[in-house]
Image (cartoon, rainbow, N blue to C red):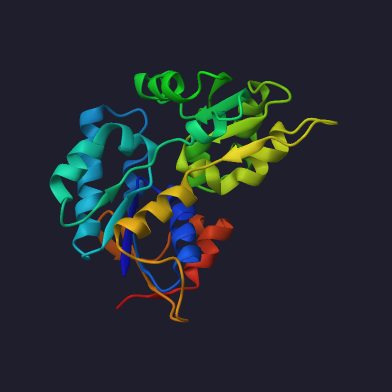
Length: 260
């Protein structure tokens, strides 16, 4: 089985690692275009064009399913990606985990890029799935870019700024950008309050990985085999970018044998 993942940059690492843990024998194709980052400020037309190029590069390796491991691409390009690739390649989009995070009511913060915060797409998700919760939308300018470049000081600044906008004692925090899942521990440390229960963090990686395996007809178990890894940067085969190795998910994937 072969699962492809696409993103503007290394935000796909969390979902790729989730696929690896659920189904270690699956071959992985990671397709991104970091030179075109960030996608958030671009027009929907630009995002769609970029996403199609990245997805077609991945599809050239004949995967059994493609994960769109990018919230921005899922918002703007998912219909075009499905029209271009399905039914030959099932396409699985990424949706912020607003529904499960809000199911218990209470205070919920949604960390997202400035372009997504307050967008009609996110507003509709809040309206449809978070009526029982007290929702705070938290824009995180610069955080995805800082994670992409593994810029420790910039990550600390962006996380601290977003934490300052997050209500004290919040029950749940939705990580509304795939890049944020790579620094989930740092986000938790920033939003926890003394004497208060730790908030639950809700990402999307596990859910989209499981859905991709279902769509690909696979089972989340292993026969002892270990899958191979193909990395595409701007459509060209490459190694993982150095910044990926700053994160546990990237280091785990780097241990896989590169596909010939």
